[in-house]
Length: 347
Image (cartoon, rainbow, N blue to C red; front, side):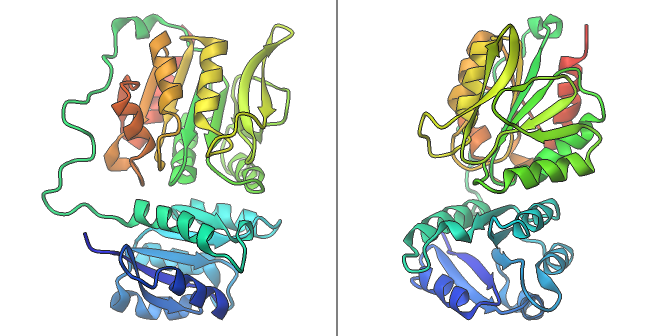
């Protein structure tokens, strides 16, 4: 398989050279060009033909957001934003994800001396969004694996909550689903989107400002209310539990998991608190977070939905849930909201 072609855009000479050194062997990722501005990238797009672009937002000239708009209009390809969780950068990063960037990396999490950790996280993301199957390559979902039968009982069951998990490509997918839900949802919805600490508040605020439904970041002890969407904060787990005969959301730092917040932790708490009265959705994302939690929910009779491969940026988490036998329905992104509304409508 040929290496993924990467273009680097950053006004820092140090960062450009550092990223080129990270992938200098060219075996999995080949850096085909490095630009110090959006204008320089756009002049070379057709010549470099990148599969993936890493993009700094805080550049002089036309800047990162305008550069992203031009990429999406002229030669669309996956864009990974290199950002910081500063008060200024976090909202800019959320705007970039809304405009088509598929993921981001917080540069402040990594040492400027030891770049190996940065290399590992970038390599995983670049390969996930940039790898293209070769002609004749079999589909990623193993032959014979199918969704659970829908079952006649689902039509008569009452659902009290919606839980959603997403990772790479998730912010834009979530915005699509939430926008299509409209201004009224009969039950609360709780979302885990893999994001580091410092970004989820900006994510919740952006959704709340642009959508007809109320969106907020979870705080410890937040009570659940219908027609509200709750976003798990980065760096902590969100769990559902009952306190004083009322369902609420609590935050925890245990257990230690590769992702905090974790979709599995949320889904497993939903199974414990609501049993079969849950609609669980897994959207685009790398890895397998959510598969075990969704299997626990499915075993209780909850209604489980996975985004289909064709509409995913990365068909990782939904695929893992399918392989675990945890999915009742697999749907394209643009049909998920309507199905949620149908399931949770008062009966």
